[in-house]
Structures are given as C-alpha cells and as structure tokens.
Image (cartoon, rainbow, N blue to C red; front, side, top):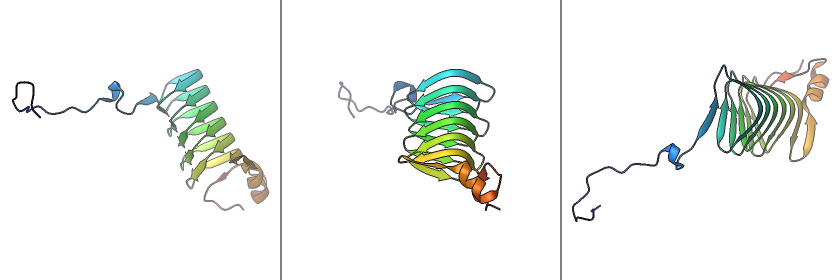
Length: 153
C-alpha cells in the first residue's frame, strides 16, 4: 500500500503469468503434426494430430476430434473426441464424447460415455474386466462395436 518513501503506491498488481509456474500449462499437438515414440508430460496435453507410441501424462489427456492415437496412454484424466487404438489406463475420469472411437484395452476410475461414442474392446473398472465387443456381439449378432445410446437389434 505504501512504498519505502512513505508515499501511496498507485500501480496495479500483476498476477503471475502461466510461464512463471503460477498458472496452468497445456501441451498441444496440432492437426497435421505426427509423432512416433514416447511422450512424457507433467501437465495437460491436447492431441489434434497423430501419435503412434506411448503417452504418459500426470494430468489430463485430450484427444480432439481430429486427433488419432495408436499405442498406449497412461494418465490421470482423459477426454476422447477422436480415435484411439491400443491400451488406455486412466486413474480417475475417462470421458468419451459423441465423436469418439476407442478400440483396445480400457481401464478407468470413472467413466462417462456420451451417446454416439463407440467402444470396442475390454474395459475394466476397479479390477473387473468386461468385454464390450463380446457383449455387443451377443446382443446384436455379428456387430463388433455399438454406439452408445443405440439399442441392439
């Protein structure tokens, strides 16, 4: 409020910038970018391009509508709007949006699937494995995957 001269300060206070470590960082792989290999991230990462390999993230992974990941993901939270094929392990919340397509082994703490999102593979919550493809095949003949919100025929 007062500076060392005893005069009232009239300047504005500045808030810490994201680059200074006081804010939240987001890594981004934009559409048209393709990466092969292993990625380690401490903060959120958004994928609108293509990844083939492993992605380890201490925070949230977002696969955008144009994003494609083939391989393995291990993260705290995930939002999938694009395509994923492989093994995904989410410690907390996995949110599968209406444009998402997931194939492979899926494990999660909590799951949200919006109508239209597709899952084809084995899912597990709390150590209990269930085969989604098997359940969909039994319910609808030879169909491998089933859109959420659609009734089996």
